[in-house]
Image 1: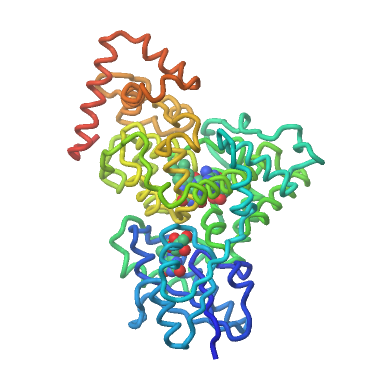
Image 2: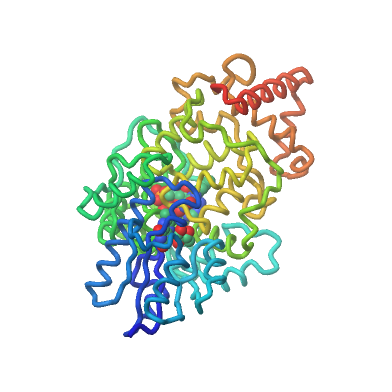
Length: 508
Ligand code: FAD
Ligand code: DLZ
């Protein structure tokens, strides 16, 4: 006799997830591969393959433990195609109506569970450092919700890198030391790669058949797909890459897709890895003298600072957050975001790596594709759908504030105190992309001038009313104002020409 259904979603794959902790005899765990979740954006096939494999292996581990699991595969002829459809089907089969769920990471699915004709209790997901209530309390009454202040709260709460009430090493934040440009070469050969096992191969065939036409390659699939593999991947990062993580955190290299990054977001976000375990492992490396403070603090800040902060903003701002477009940007996403040719080498390299790996590191997302999208005035919802589709770690709770807030300034400045815009200079300094590019990063106008240079001024000029009073942008406007009228006109005209050609699908 089944008494209750327990829903476990593809990004809730840990025995420690709230709804599962509540499991008792008579409960039936419901897990389902469904087309609605796989197609509400055209997810990268690598993401789908990763999640379906990890789901199957997790379900098997629950069964081994003696728990009852009803698992629906994508090709099950009875599959209803949606999470709520599967809950209703299982409820009908077993004559039950009570469902326990861990709150999903997207408003879309929270709403679907609320609208489901069963009695669904959604429990807060506590795989995070802070609760919703803690973020609310922190945010309440503040004029600005800056990540740095939130991060310090999280340091105090976790005790990570703390010496009593003081930050270890005397500084809260070592970001200033973490801005070295791309080195000549790196001595880390990338994340731990796992050879696909039988379950993975089966899923790769299924996903290749069903989603093989979407943007993204399944070739050379190497993600870990269970918690044991995820923790081995973490260990490799801590040992071989963490010591240099800080120094080269912002660097970009054409032939080094991973540099010294951890590539653990896929594991953290799906439940295969616990965020505090990752932070403690880094802290231990520092205590043992195996990694410097700037690297360890930088890594921990990303997880207990940024990751918790963007989640807090997403839930606090509510379901309309992802729909904001404060700068009224409405240009369509050009084809080169989906792999069409472009002569901008930084974009071409970033998109190509995204296609093959379903991964790009933070600065590629922020300062290459994100920066371009903002400068060019692309529609933030289209931009957001793109990020959601192409990265294996993408879920709205973590992606929205990064896209809508951090990169597109579409939330009007909740996340960022000024737009993250830069001309070609930043990319040239931090990467090797500009060497061998069709465009010249040094050229501001005329034949071969880098589009980032033209669009940078075009952006500032067209949004002058909004930003000229921002003290952090005064310098930029002063530089623009020092240019001759003739030069300003040339920049405006050449930027317009570029945008028009891009809109027409010309090779730019
Ligand atoms: P590392 O550089 O090794 O950092 C360690 C961990 O810190 C990451 O695994 C991640 O969990 C966390 N982290 C770092 N930066 C952020 C951040 N800004 N926000 C939240 N967590 C962070 N991250 C996602 O997990 N999912 C997304 O959908 C996502 N979309 C993004 C979209 C844009 C436009 C931008 C600018 C950033 C986005 N990020 C997203 C944040 C960040 O780029 C990725 O977390 C990171 O690149 C993952 O690679 P990694 O595991 O090698 O991270
Ligand atoms: C992303 C995703 C995909 C591709 N497929 C499934 C699925 O078939 N079944 C499932 O339970 N979850 C899937 N997910 C993850 C959900 O979309 C995710 O739980 C929500 O986006 C909330 O974070």
